Image (spheres, rainbow, N blue to C red):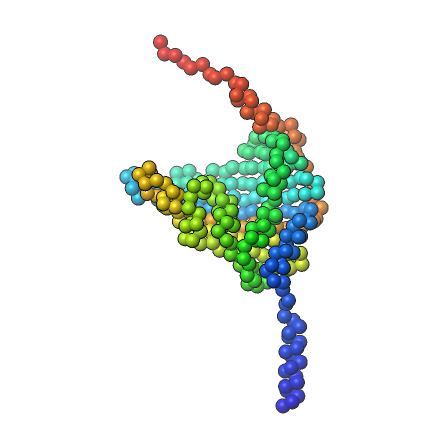
Length: 295
């Protein structure tokens, strides 16, 4: 009996050494922010689906009573912060009840303070971009800041592209929820809405994968399911029919290639593209067309 107890004690000690020691949520956040601040290069990929259903029960035209919009966006990018270069491409496919599969292609480069953008084949150059533009376009930093502002709960361990990662459930506060909502449904004007009511009535499932060795954010999966009414939009009574808008979105952001060599070169046609200011001045200086006058 004593030998059996001794053997069991040895097994317990051996197994206890196999239990993974993980940092506290706050320690993991601190490691993540520190690693992001030291990061020099990274790549990222975005895959987002969004469905908006607008219902106006008072509309007499049955075909207009319910309107559906669906959008699929797939993009990828890379950045070299030490060289002050960035690239991103995005393909967006939009469908409505009447029009299916309208595709928009976008390609963007940032070199120092100049942004070069190609939309549906046309390049535009935008010099003199403010410094905060870099933070706005930095997908890795954006993901880290959103995670840092939220509560995280360890729910397991998984590999992301071969990298060991902590899998965490993320619970945002209302301010972070509003930031995510504006990113997910940027086509909807949130500034005039009752975000508190939307926050309390909406559903968000947010899962993140954070690298064990560096704390860098590897993957974010955010699913939103919201119903927004006229009252939540703060529309004065009588100014508009009572409407209800349902929004469902599913967005995945994957980050990789941290601190690996990345060289980004801007296409020659982008470097010689007209600036947005040149285009604006040309439009202003263009004389109006003479209208035909009926005699």
